[in-house]
Image (cartoon, rainbow, N blue to C red; front, side):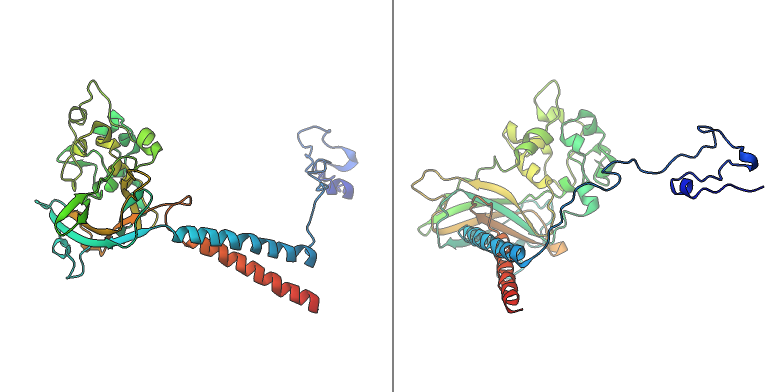
Amino acid sequence: MAMNYNAKEEADGHPGGVGAVAGGSGVAPGGVGAGKSRKPDNTAFKQQRLPAWQPILTAGTVLPAFFIIGLIFIPIGIGIFVTSNNIREYEIDYTGTDSASPCNKCLNVSWNSTPPCTCTINFTLDHPFESNVFMYYGLSNFYQNHRRYVKSRDDSQLNGDNSSLHYPSKECEPYRTSEDKPIAPCGAIANSMFNDTLELYRIDGEETRTPIHLNKKGIAWWTDKNVKFRNPTGDTNNLTALFHGTTKPINWPKPVYMLDSEPDNNGFINEDFIVWMRTAALPTFRKLYRLIEKKDNLQPALAAGNYSLEIAYNYPVHSFDGRKRMILSTISWMGGKNPFLGIAYITVGSICFFLGVVLLIIHHKY
């Protein structure tokens, strides 16, 4: 008995020996034993006959590209860098680690200290802040990007779902329940909410202090305020009744329905709470605390002069070697003060221009 061999058929994916027997007997075409062709269809795509374009790198194409990139990037970088430097910014570290700091007495404060420790820091603005001023609080060495920390929340509960309000997600453990009651809002993020109180005063003369109006609304993203965060609903608008049967987070001095006296800024839609719940990517970060708006176009938002910052020091950071800051800043069309982007553009543009000059010299010399 011998097997028939057909080189052409094998090349086409049809080995002639499959099902073939002596005498020419075999399985009829289309039968169970018939092999299926694996040859790609005769199309331009499958046979790789599509037209292609490959750039040919020559001195006439590479050199102009380097010079054009350099000439575009360098002016853009200079513009961004100058814009960033024109932004006014003033920062105060009020952690209190320095023994001479007015806040040193509050360094070892606990979460629920009663009464809260207060301290006052005087400072001077040498230049006026002409446009609206954004007041931030900053934390250092605080890892909001830890995986378990980021997951420790219940978005359904924060969106006003009544079922999740009384039966929070297991992701919130160990801040899911307290004293056999569900915590609202649950989770480690909410439990560690920043709760220092900052007040700003302008000092006129020796003893006259004028409070600076700090706007607490408009500091959260619109989508967070109106879409992601909602209070629970029911037969009443009374938040105390709607949150009945829940308890406050362990580290909070008061429940969520007492965060503010104004109904449109209370409960889960409190803007300080919403800002805190948007976790930071890096361990050193700042979050918007208040807005200082210009009263008219004739006067700056903050004139040059002497000021005092009064702090109700409630948030402990000394245990994890953290630091706390208050930042006053204006903004521009590109956001806050950040010289990195301008420096990056200038650096890339300069490198391209330099390489263009070097390659031009080599091309003409060799």
